[in-house]
Image (spheres, rainbow over the protein chains, first blue to last red):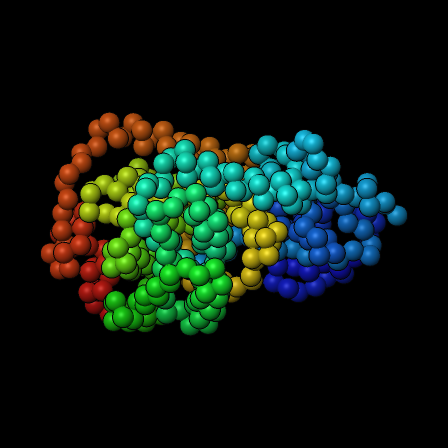
Length: 64
Length: 310
C-alpha cells in the first residue's frame, strides 16, 4: 500500500491488511495528532488498510 | 480480500449505519460525516448558549488568521447569525509580517471573507509597531511565540476597538486550551492560569469568547474537510522555537494513553478559577505610562518589547 506522510513524502508498505493505527505506530505518528484518508475518504484510525489502498496522513496540530 | 462492509467502521449514532469518518477518543463513539458535522455544530452552539457568549446587539470581531481554527469559527458564527438578528460579525486579520508564511494565509482569509460576504479588516505589525515580526524578533527567536502573542493581542484589541466591536471571538480549541494550562503551570505563571478573558475585567477590556474551546483539533479539521473548507497552509516558521510545540507532543502522548487528559486539565483550571474568583481583587486598573494601555505594572509588555535595546 502507498502511504502519504504529513510532509507529503510517500512510502510503500508491503504487508497484509492492517489497522491504520498500526501503520501510524510503525511510522512513529501519534493518532491524536492526525487524521487519515483511505483512497480519499476519511476513516477512523481503527479502520483497516490493505495492499492496494492509498493511505494519506494529515497532521492536524499546526503552529501558527 | 476484505469486503467493503467488514473494512468500514460504522457510525454508532442511532439510528445510523453509515461509514464512520472519526472516532471520538474519550467517548469511543464513531461518527459518520453527517453526525460529525452535527456534533461540531452542537458543541459550538452549546458553548455559545451555555456560557452566554453572545448578547443582543453584539458586534463580534473574529480573530481570523485564515488558518483552520479561525476558519471553522468564522463559518460557524456566520451560519448561526440568522438566529441573532441584531448581532453583527466582522473579521480581523493580523499581518505579523512573517516571510514565506503569512502571505498565503492572508490570501486564504481574504478568499473566505469575500466568498461569505463578511466585513474584513487587516492590521499589520509594521503599521502599528514600526516593523514586522521578523525584524522585531532578531536575536530573540527563542521567545518568538511570546513576543508575537503579546503584539498580536494588542493589534487585535486596537483593531477591534477601532471597528466598534463588543466581543472578540478567538478560535482556541481544546488542544490549545489544555496546552496553555500546562504551559502556565510549567512556567509558574499563576496569574495567566487563572485569568479569564471572557469576563471583560477590568471593564476597559473587550471580552474574548472561545466557542471552539470544547472541540479538539481533529474534530475541527474533520469538520472543515467534510464541509469542503479545508485548505492546507504552511506552518509558522517560528513554531519549533516554542515551548508549546514540546507541550503539544507531551500532551498528545498523554491523551493517547489516557483519553480525557486534555479535558481534565481544563476542568482543573476552571476549578482553580472558581476558588480564586472569591479572593481576587477587581477594579485595580493600571495604565502603561508609555502608551496608556491597561497593564499590570508601570510599563506594558508591548512597550517593553518595543523599547528593548538591540
